[in-house]
Length: 141
Image 1 (cartoon, rainbow, N blue to C red):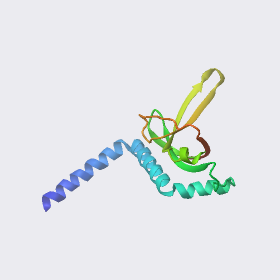
Image 2: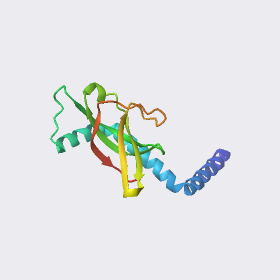
Image 3: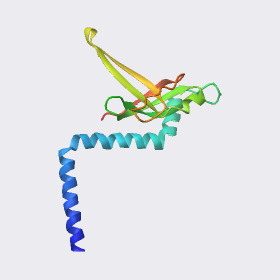
Image 4: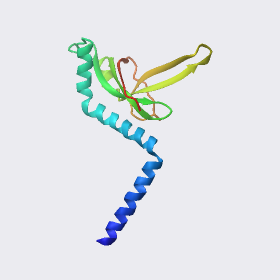
């Protein structure tokens, strides 16, 4: 029993040391995981809130809305959430939105493209056509 306590103490100490060394990255990972969990758990409620805010009715069959996480392409981090809108069958395919960005230096312009995709994996970006972004929920990482 004493030996298990010693190993547990060593494990906790190593975890603490690794956490202190990787503090900023660990914080971002925890926030990103938290964003994914919140969107997965409360997505329908957030969606209803945005629809109420914008007076959007989804009772017809022409379109639907859904809240999904935003994946920052290049880092794979969860950077927030968005509401997507489009035909119901297409919206149901959307699992995330990929954020692709770039700078147009001569004019000092930053461009962010938000692309609805059918996966939460950055390695397989498959656009869902006919779906657009109708609301943005930003979370600072």
